[in-house]
Amino acid sequence: MKIIHVVGARPNFMKMAPVYNAIKKYNIKQLIVHTGQHYSENMSDIFFRELKIKSADINLRVGSNTQASQVANIMTKFENIVLNEKPNLVLVYGDVNSTLAASLVCAKLGIKTGHIEAGLRSYDLNMPEEINRVVTDKISSFFFTPSKDGDTNLIKEGTDKKNIFFVGNVMIDTLINFLNVIKKRKRIDLPFSKFGVVTIHRPSNVDDPAKLRDIVKSLNKISKKIPLIFPVHPRTKKQLEGIKDLYFNKDRIRLTEPLGYLDFLNLIYYSSLVITDSGGIQEETTYLKVPCLTLRKNTERPITISEGTNTLIGTDYKLLERLVDEIISGNYKKSKIPNKWDGKASERIAKTIIKLNL
Ligand code: UD1
Image 1 (cartoon, rainbow, N blue to C red):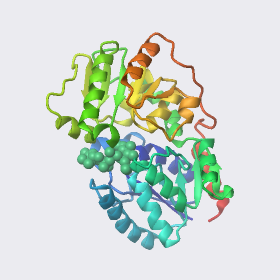
Image 2: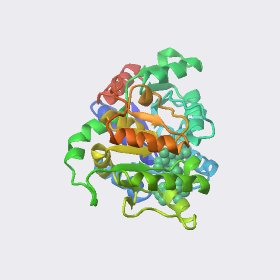
Image 3: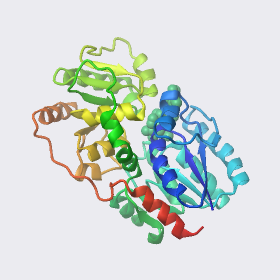
Image 4: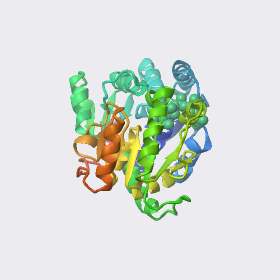
């Protein structure tokens, strides 16, 4: 059997690493195709090194572009790879453009695909990721879900139950595998010991200058109560640079370049709270029991709210500031770790693939 893993953007790498390793225990040929959607050292290469993933066998080097051009470039290049390699199964991860492009190519060529992190829905088609999730799940062959709501959504959409496998969360597999290293890692140089972490990169938050300005204003207020560290995503950096007279309380907010996996998770682990619009960080904070305030009006990961540490803020910055107070005074809600977020999701995926006998 031959499997191709397709990855392209930062959040894919920590999902693929444990699945690749779990499948390695069986006699299966595996190829890693990196689409090159993310290409910078700190958005891509560092993750391969830190997570000890072997370098990609093939890099399509598509780089940044408009949504349509990026997807189209990946499709044209990936089609050739599939035609040459004739895999029995292609594994795609999460909800990025590379996920959508690769699954479309396979659907058209009649190649079986497994979607890892299937079934998640925000029901907000203004997000490029929701379009990617819905289409990928419509045309994939096998569905590996991180939480039961994924199964429910897929069944509601008419997916055949026999192809849905509730395996748990592969991103948490990586977190558990590296937890000791993360805890013991030397902290990046910081002038404070108690702090909150901020990440913002969604187009809905950063592409509108007025909204980005409001967010920064609120962060400035919050920073008076607790200092903040804010690794700035390239998209956000570009947008921030375009806003004139933007003021950051630099004494209390430390801006950095995007961080590698280990430095970032070390910060999250020891932080008092996280303010984010990321998908994956909602899950990592839930596992680590760190309060997470999400600057979005919806989430495709509702279990992080119902069971975990997450609260949706939308654009209600008063609520954000009130919840920061609650967290600081120790009155924030209690949480638990969701079912099958136990470090064994990838093993379950590997065993399932073997049973499928493709
Ligand atoms: C993509 C994913 C998003 C994910 C995010 C994590 C889609 C639709 N979006 O969004 O789901 O949460 O990755 O980062 O797939 N850039 C660099 N270096 C890089 C990559 C990008 O400097 O290695 C810059 C480019 O100027 C680019 C911008 O960052 O225009 C945004 O990158 P892009 O891949 O378009 O989307 P993300 O916002 O990163």
